[in-house]
Image (cartoon, rainbow, N blue to C red; front, side, top):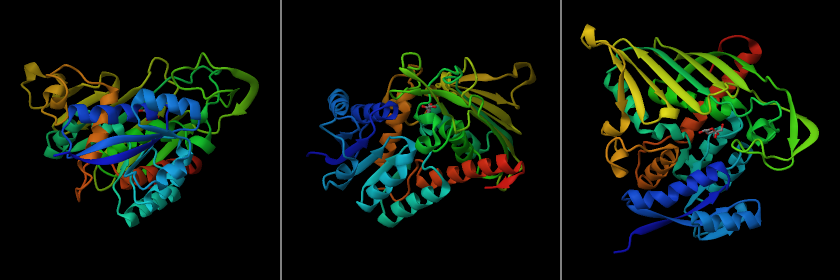
Amino acid sequence: MAKKTVNVALIGTKFMGKAHSNAFRQVTKFFDLPVEPVMKVLCGRNPVETKELAAKYGWEEASTDWKKVIARNDIDVVDISVPGNMHHPMAIAAAKAGKHIICEKPLAANVKQAKEMLDAVTKAGVKNLCGFSYRFAPAIGTIKKMIANGDLGHIYHFRAAYQQDWIVDPEFPLNWRLQKKVAGCGALGDIGAHIIDMCQNLIGPVEEVAASMRTFIKKRPLTEGSATIAAAAGHKKSSKMGTVDVDDATIILAHIKGQDTLATFEATRFAPGRRNHNSIEVNGSKGSVLWNQEDMNIFQYYNVNDPGTLQGFRRIHATDSGHPYTGAWWPSAHIIGYEHLFTHEVHDFIAQLNSKKVTYPTFADGLACQKVLEAVEKATKSRKWEKV
Ligand code: SOE
């Protein structure tokens, strides 16, 4: 008997559009899903490029009109993988049209928008996922279980640093990620959002914050194209300069609700040599764990109960740790990579389309993160601790 299918429309053709396209293409090849996602239509701004990319990535059709795509009766799932300023209008329209929604992080440009988005999906009764992709790394799944089991005991510290270096060069052009009106935020929302979600997912809700935000390079050359992270050098720069109105780096101190835990977060695009160093360290009364995305398949575990002569950090292969995703790929220690996170994300979303309770990050988690982002901005201005 033929499997039931759901038709997917993906809006966005760049970095995340590519990652999500790959996920939809791979997921049915490696996992058994109760319903099969059909790659129906890819939507982008440039008609020629979108058509080419739709064919390349495996989408049946291409479109440049997101409103029409969302309104189509034959579309079941809308995936929003575009810059932050478009998340709100697209998600509201998709919810009103009764579509299930995947939306990239940060969920919105502010708390008000995020609340409206959550209200819209709740009212429509549609499934919703916010793209905190690092939750889907096998090591993170295992660490979450260890913390929940009490293997680390009482958690004293959650320490996270998400460091990148792609805009260290002052000549790097003012691309969309450096403009508040398009991105909605800077390093804090783009990469800080990942580690704030990581903390709220692994440890507990952030209750209050103190913070400092900086924009080190305040003027940058305007770009004639859309400069991407990977291709800074090859871009046509104009001689005109524009203002960077988002943060280059943010540092946060935080308290966790109902727990005697101190958390720190650092989100920066000014750490030369750190290309995508998303790292966490958790210290508890019974042990510690360390993880970093650049060595994604490994995590380190220190157990205070190991015999004294053998104490030290163990290097653990997360592909060996019995995680539900790893068996679908390769034998133990045949490593997986960044793109697999999105495949796992899409897997969970499609597999749980008919479930009452879901295990993936939702718009409620997106809103919870957005509230922390807003409190951080407030704390930076007030120079005081601010409640989330
Ligand atoms: C750019 O800073 C970026 O692509 C983020 O937007 C992603 O969320 C992160 O996974 C990698 O870095």
